Length: 367
Image 1 (tube, rainbow, N blue to C red):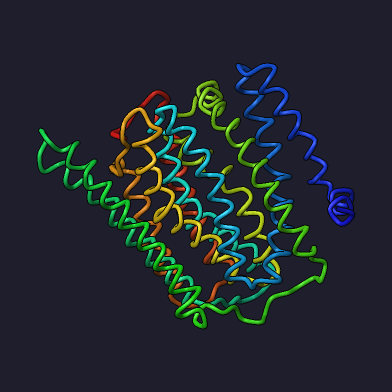
Image 2 (cartoon, rainbow, N blue to C red):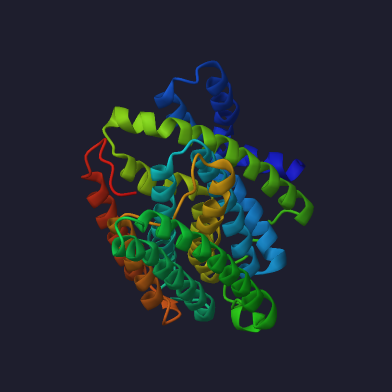
């Protein structure tokens, strides 16, 4: 506990933790103050992400970058899963699907690209284990193909298209979860030697004990989940006030804020030349969303949703996810990176963001 308090005292960003109880109180006292809740939620998630970053790095020093990256991706996606479950229960399927597609694109383009950029500005050329990157990219590409299938079936028979798409989505959900489980078995058990990190990263020796780091991870993850729920409940109203469409809110804003904790860790690792961890977080998180979070939401919709949810996304979302997946496969083929590669990935993401920004508020695509 002394180490945690010392970290808070010496890190000005962590002073913003004061906003965490503030946003919880404001949400209880003035639940209709959506714009204020939106701002306070963002200000709360930033220091929580920084705290999660330090705790995850401490755990990664004991477990290795591959497992550390997987741990961080899992914790970050647990928050996004909780956010999506809340939206699912409310029947906000547009927000759910936009946030799923947005999270995949944000992680595989923006998070990966910014990691390459930040690491490349400090290190001339960086190397990482391309086996891990290629496996995650391949899993992501397979999941993207699965997203194309329901839309294709729905177009074959207009009368029964919706029922066919729903039935297919349920089968695909089970298949994708099985693929994700087999991917974990392959990378962590049967062929784990292929995914070992290189010994070229910097360590500062200031990691926390594993007990403190683990406890901090659990507590901070819960707090991020609570604050994120407040964020999601207020972001749509705040978006309307700011003149933003639901597609932009879900695809860009929710995805960026939901991945803030993971980004903090990935960017810090890249600056320390631990690019294996950055790639594992970025692409591991994207593939985990596509192979586990999205299918799990389809199955959960039968229990907690007003009606079952399918995997039929609107054409623009599928196109962006497919481009992000193919780009990730191409980029990770070399196992090396420099700052300009990161710039290109970030620019592709910026093109998507600018396109969605032009969608008029109140527009509801075929989601």
